[in-house]
Image (cartoon, rainbow, N blue to C red; front, side, top):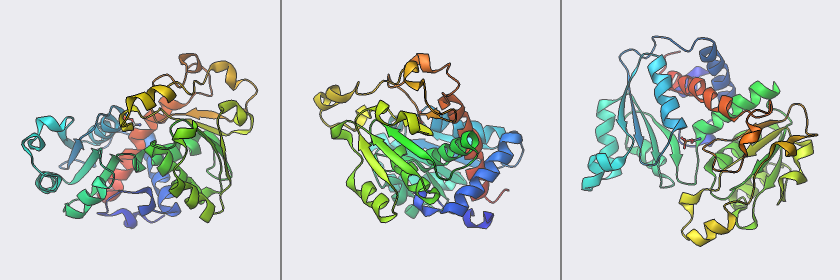
Length: 307
Ligand code: CP
């Protein structure tokens, strides 16, 4: 386990790190799950810059920092910052880097996190850049898969919903590529996984197939990873209306599925998982969101060299 690999480095893409690094984060997250309240961030300031809405990512980062006795600065709405006056992302990042030890940023533009990391003197953690990547979500997804399956290896993973714009899906495919998965891709025809990710899977000899119905693959699935149709990424509202109710997972659809199957969802959900699933022991999405606190504690502590 090499913790040194994280020291002072930004986390922009899940591909910035490899299999051993993911396993290191899993180990450290396990440590924080057992000991979530510590004093290790005393004197440290973490900036959370959210140019897009968030509940889980921002608040779990802030919960993670608070439990480790660090301080938070930042904004949840860029219109309350000098961005509103026309300040550039570069100037904003360079300024906030003067005030903080690490920047967590969500931004609607793909590549913005990479750019921020290049102009910042402190590490930048990508909390989602447009439809591109959401690496910390992926790490908590890996932790959730590991906790529920006792392994990351040789799993059949069914990805459901908006595979075109769903950044969590894109990062998860790349991370799981290290663990010999089989992917079932369930989406409306207009929201299929983009070719670049299919090419990535082909190059790695990872089996995948495309389907239009959840029931096509649910019986053999280990992880059912459901995603929201990403309304905010559609340029034409009529196109969103056509697909918005493509999938609804209902409780009865889980009958006859494998005992170890767990339903994951990065959340927020709109209506793609019926609330009658929530009480099913196979529903794991709220525990998954809780796991985000421990994984984000691990990421911050490793990057700042505090563990
Ligand atoms: N999973 C996730 O990114 O949720 P939020 O948009 O609420 O942060």
